[in-house]
Amino acid sequence: MIIPILLLLLALSGCSFFPGGVVTLHTDRVEIASYAETFNSTQNTYRLEVHYAETPSLSPAAGKTAPDLVIARDIAGRSSLSRFRSLNHLFDKKRIPRTAFYSPLLTMGRKDKQQLLVPISFDLPILMFDSRVPEEEASTFLLNLDSVQELAQKHNRPEGERFSSMGFAPRWNPGFLLQTAMLLGADFTEGSDSSLAWNERALRGAVEYLRTWSETRNGGSAAEIVYQEKYLYDPPYRQVSLGRAKFAYSTLADFFLLPENRRLSLDFRWLSHKNRILATNRILFAGIPLRGRNPRGAETFLRWLLDRETQKMLLESSRKKMTHVFGIASGLSSLKGVNETEYPRFYPHLSGHIPSEEALIFPPPVPDNWEILKSQVVIPWLLERTTGPAGGAGLDEALRGWRQRQAF
Image (cartoon, rainbow, N blue to C red; front, side, top):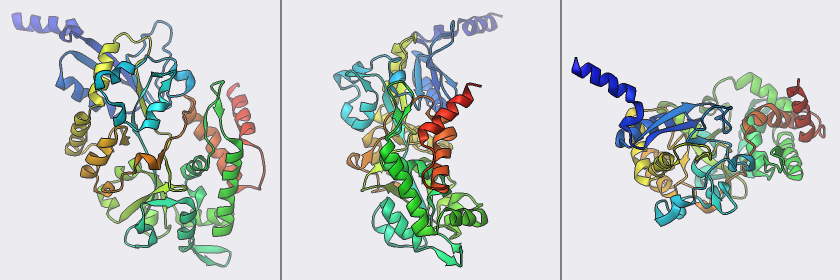
């Protein structure tokens, strides 16, 4: 009877096994759970517990304990930054060299000379195409917007007022509309009052650019819609494999989440403008909330996660376990060296094609409700403005209307 009683006492003791205590982590990335499991298996000082939420709360309800660590998107805005502890000492004594990171990413998590967030991963926009049809796009790994127009138009086969083949239309993928607007300087970001702000002149210019693209290359949005409804009912990767489209918009993470047998005939190029690639808004940051109870444990996990050898191990583990995850937390690593040396080993498509830091641009921080605003306001407005008559209501009016609807 002694052994069962002893086991019961040990179970009831909970975190007494762990001298450093329990570390609670809130995240919107499910793969972080496997990282926590690995961390827990490599040491017995701390126990990391992961809580998943699509929008992790940075302001716990009254009586609720704040998490010790948050790893999520859309937490780099002004209103969110102030809720985190300084991480400056993580870089002291060269524990984590600042030079290992993409400098603009680190800057996004800094305020008043305090590093409040550290970047974990990011994603890049791509255009997929059928590699069995080699053309001039194979000569460079960048596809500028103007080049996309020209190459896609060569695929067009008009038949009267309709098309039997069309290379690419901006509105086929709403994500492309948004990414193009951002590439052309729309700069969606968090305003001084924590609401959505943007560059109005650049946004209007982007809408005009997209409308002109449709009208001069594809005969207008009506022809694009007819073609889309008639031919583009398959997933994007199938559209290009079947020759129904020259290009399909995607992101690097989504491309590598396709089963390997579906990628055999596909290749991709970075979507760019003036030879610069703009990362998507899917940037993952980590921060330690001010009200967390175990900052030391949270820091220990961050140092472990942001170690180059750790990330190499996690990439290897994902491959062996055949997990449905790309790279580090579904993106490229925030550590330049990991992208340049480790990713090509696991993803041969990337060999020799990892963009340099100089070729990358990172979008400004967005409000913490960006995902909602993007899907319910910004993208619907872009679709309307690039499909309907010229002019029309501005994004500010659409945003006001959305806020009024939320009030009821």
